[in-house]
Image 1 (tube, rainbow, N blue to C red):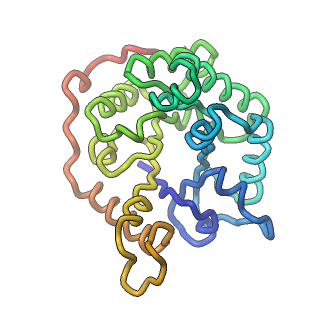
Image 2 (cartoon, rainbow, N blue to C red; image 1 turned 90 degrees about the vertical axis):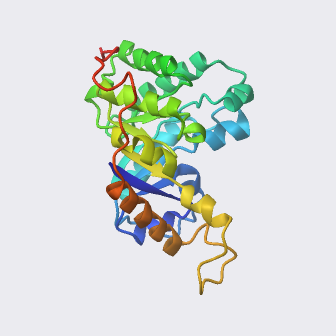
Image 3 (tube, rainbow, N blue to C red; image 1 turned 45 degrees about the vertical axis):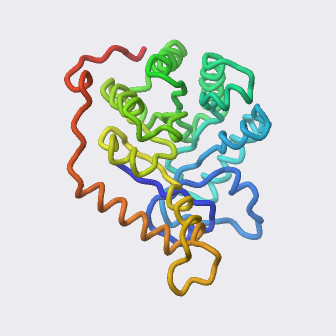
Length: 267
């Protein structure tokens, strides 16, 4: 599994050698005195959760987003993939937009298709959105109906899981989707989720270190209020998490998943 450390600090792309996960919202606000040149591989978050939470809709036109991603790919370099402008399906998001899960799914798929059509050379990934397992399988069917073979792609994002990501329900969803051949990226996976079903993920990102650091005093000798944006703290947290993942025994398969034949096939 490739683990991308989430960060609010785009300039870390020039400072570290391990993979980072950076938001378009942060990159777009960065003063353009000079371009960043990445020395690490990285992936781009579209900032969808914040966008929908603030506005109840996407205010950034897809063409403008694609243009920004093209700039990041060309100038920063080493971009592994970019999230589309997807529509999350948490109850709070449905309340904010006033739309249904099905409508959010259709808009998510439509955006991916649009981005792929206008920028076929950029590494946009499809994202599965839903709430229950049946929702995610339905979303996969929408992609298949549009001619997208998810199982053939290097990465498929899994959305709307970060706020319940260490639960048995999400573990079953992840295991089922991995079982049908999808190379999943887990958005915002915290430590509990990584240990519970990390073996089923092709990649994941996490900003959990920053939230933890806000509740703790700064490291000895550090003069900032806390280490929520501290590279030393973040790098140390990353090493601890990866060490635990490599040394902790693998979680057993969930009953009813291991050995079951796939129930969904790509077109």
